[in-house]
Image (cartoon, rainbow, N blue to C red):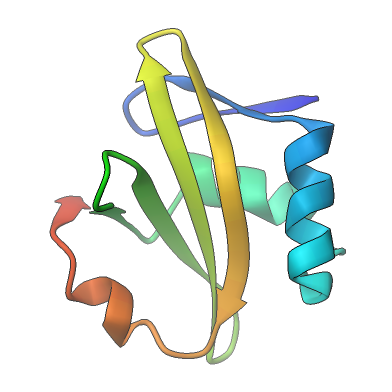
Length: 100
């Protein structure tokens, strides 16, 4: 299991179970394991989710964005909920931007 450090300095886990879920639901994500971790550590922006989660976004390829949804449970622990690629980031930009 790999861990990324969020902008809030919280370790965010990416357990095998979550990675399996992500690649089963979004097969195009299979080659993006380390990019998911990099998106948590160095996002282009972070937005607030509806139920306390965070949405980190980073441009993956020209015109494609990697979105990683994660939760910070405490100052010492957090985990990835899901991740996916999208072409339009307008839907995410309607949310409240919390970083930068």
